[in-house]
Length: 450
Image 1: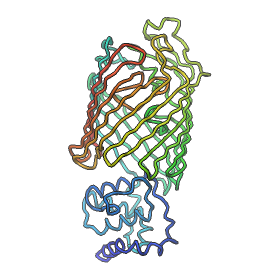
Image 2: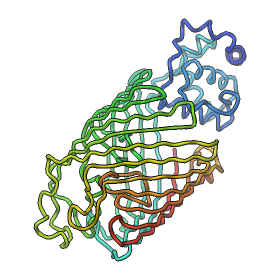
Image 3: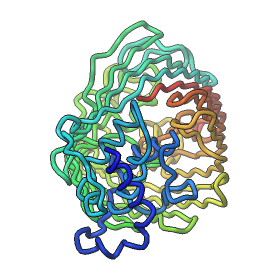
């Protein structure tokens, strides 16, 4: 064991001068951006086991090669770790055993199969109160009483990831929710399940998974199908599949209604470009299309719509297409700005039912300061932004206090009081688009990550 540690430490000191020796045995392939090793190394860095490249960074603007990752693991092996850190080091040593061997570091034979399934998850409590002028207490689409937009919810989430081989993993997300207002618990839902293959400059996913094309302003939700991503600094993503029509926010804004009956799933495809190179600038552009199918209002739709509107109000031949562009700039390690714009080809607001105005446009801009890092106690971040989220472009956006069909300001802060515990507080204020109804919303959340 002493020889192993000496070998590891010696390797870490001389590897820079000896790198060409191992070039033939090691092709210097990148570790994929979403590989579990990044999280493991970041955790070891937070615990003081390793120090990255010497400047306390891990070169987040590019992927790390397997060779570079092995260097970090060699340094970690030279430390006298214990407990959870030792388990991480052992798992990394098993993953990069071949590269470590090429570096001259002998690794004892480890049972990789004993830890082929990695579990992450969280317990989360969310409270939100949204007051809309002129809107009374209501019955939501599930038939539950709501006090003028209140949310009072517990969430327990598990996210397993199972290794199939060196390139493929199977991933899932399992959610269980409890409504604290009515003291009811939903059934456990398999929200996502997909297979993912990671190759050099190429990734493919198939199954039911989160959309990653313009998922801030256009559609931050699940689709079922296939997507492929090519490239390194400039990445192109192609996606094809279907989405659940009831996730489209325009269908969920008619007060006191069980909104839809006999609603088909919506066909979906999209293409996106994303640049995140070595500069401080990031940029993105995308086009997404939703073929909504025949959607029918339920019997409890508001009387203001009139009996003639009940029935098929979006035909299968109608397609909602949305263009979007966005860019961000990081001035230094603390201050960053981001802006995004989207434009659809249909109004898709409650104007389709004779209630309010044109909602083809959506845009958002935000200034951020610092950022909460769950692994680092005491870190925090704050932001302020303005959102204008027309239904026809913001199909299902990601933000919590200014939502689709609304425009207004948002301010928020996140803080890490203890390692892996994140507290969040937000406030939003504005109007419903095309109406005189003002709203204000307070949002609080506490997450316990594991």
